[in-house]
View (cartoon, rainbow, N blue to C red):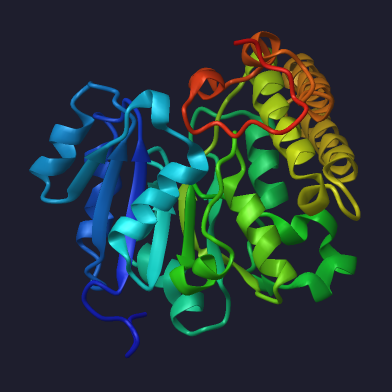
Length: 321
């Protein structure tokens, strides 16, 4: 899959970590073996568990960001600018690469100039239930494609979908929108929406596959979706225009319930509980920005964010102290 546009140090990989010592070796192995010879930077948010030392022992670059300064958008932007490569891949250490040529496939649309961003297929691994399998199949189909705003009538809000658990970006395109922004979550969705508005395209690469899914209970699902809803409201002009996430969410819930009934009826209580909690969390997040910080922190899954030095303070949002 290598081509004439790929050269030494033309591709960078950012792996954002926290308490990932047991994951980092498996995560880095296929990257270190890639014929694209990427420049790899492991970013750690001061977990102090040996992640940095384990990564350094494998010969990759590392930086540590104090937890009080960590931000999903700004930390990735810091790493991207430090690498300064034409193509930069964002990866999380729990996204397990499924094939040796993963990096070649993932970055190909960027290297060929077909898209400004490309993201990998995610599949649920062993130990996950029907809800996780359906979730991954719903968002990550088996066929690759390229999307632009012209495809909105077909894809709706999915047009701006992306996941930085495994995604490749054109640094030149990111420069044109000012890079990743300070945000609670969804830095990749914000960036994709901005890129699409400028006429750029997003590629989904089914051949670049990773095992990555989270088995959440109702509380975890509520908090995760609270963060998503909160972020959507703060960036409403970008992320709530047109057919929104709620419509897509209803289609997913229907699919998940039907599949659970057919494949694993014993899992139905958990499926219903998680779906209900997700819906409630998202709606609470949409109403969240005016909430007192102490309450928002309690509802959120990102405990560090609410006292972070990198947290944006929107005008009119009350925060004690």
